[in-house]
Amino acid sequence: MDVGTRASNAVDGESALISAVRAGDADLVRILLHEDSDSDYRDAAFCLAVRMHAGRIAQLLLQYGADSGQSRPDDLIPLSEAVDSGSPALFEALLGHEIRGRYPESELLEARDLARRWHETGVEAELRRRTGSRDAIARTPVQDDEYNSVDEFTLGDMTVRDGHGAILTYVEELLGVRTSFEELMDRALAHAGQENHTTWSSVTILLAGRRDQATWTAAAALRTNPHPSRRLFGAEVLRLTHLFDDSDEDAFAGPALDMFTDWSAEETDLSVLTEVLVALGEHIDPRAEATLLPHAGHPDARVRRAVAQGLSALSSPPAFSGDARTALLGLIADPDAVVRKTACRVIAEGRDHDPVFADAMAAVLDDTDRLVQLAAVYGLALHDDARCVEAARLLGPPQRGSLEEESYLGEVWRYEWRRDGR
Image 1 (cartoon, rainbow, N blue to C red):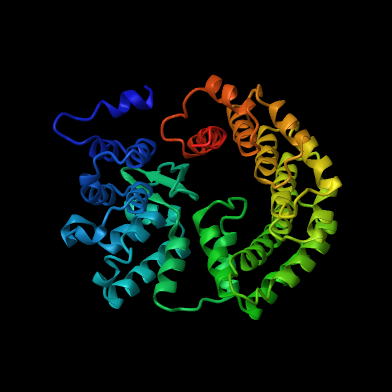
Image 2: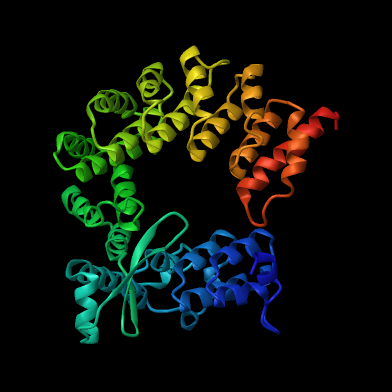
């Protein structure tokens, strides 16, 4: 059933938004929120999502203006129940700034201790202790919030997610507890190989936010660790430390560039190398470009994606360098669709409007991947190239609820507005 059909199938007497929440349909909830449908029901929908343990949907509703402060205590669930669910998204939704003051420190301490017990015991062992069952446990990866995933475990009629490490990290931060680098790293490494796991991401973001020399030194020391997962953890903490530093001093910019330049030449693990190259791409410096370019022909698509994306930060001069130009023109014809789309977007948003780039984007207007086609239309519009108009018409309207498609095709309208002098 398509989205349009689902949107019209609200239960009689119930808003489409409430029906979508009740069905657990996060995609439809996002579409309805983006279209500003049933805005009067957002607060009630938030309470329903929390009671259903639908943390991802609850977070979506908060992002689109739901006011958790309008809820009564009995509209929601206790913090302990949110911890038991194992969903960091659900737990954090209950601690938004509108209602955080409802929870005394004693309740936060109890939540911390409960999260620690789950984390240290392990979800499977705790499930067996609570249910007494020796049956097989089902394990399924699920999206917990907009960016991160967790594993969901089901035994009998009890279902729990394994985000307790992230919950513990979050509540410690609220309580002002400074957990050691080593303990936080161990929490993240419990999910090694799942770098989009919410515990991994919450730990690396927290450590990066410290921006102190002790954390930097501990992360940098992992560069020579024999275990790739530890090198990856260190690289991500270092990368985010520089990325999130919005201070005037930007004290870690130079050390980060030096570190990653040397690191890229010696790293053998593909995941770690990709992270290092992504980090280099976040520096506007000729040395970063010189280090990225040799990897433009790497056999692994993840590495080539990092190179394509990295060249965007280096496009502030009026024109790309000759080597960057050659690399981008090759990458826009790459076998991997994500690499093609990334290169196309980098060219589109660069300040270099040489006709050779417009022709390269026009050449992928008939690409087999719709997003590559849309990125080309977007780029041609930004380059004031009339070929974008007919190409956009052939592509048709954006898919309902796709902000990316709306952004790409909206640029064509702006081009026509400029062209017609409106």
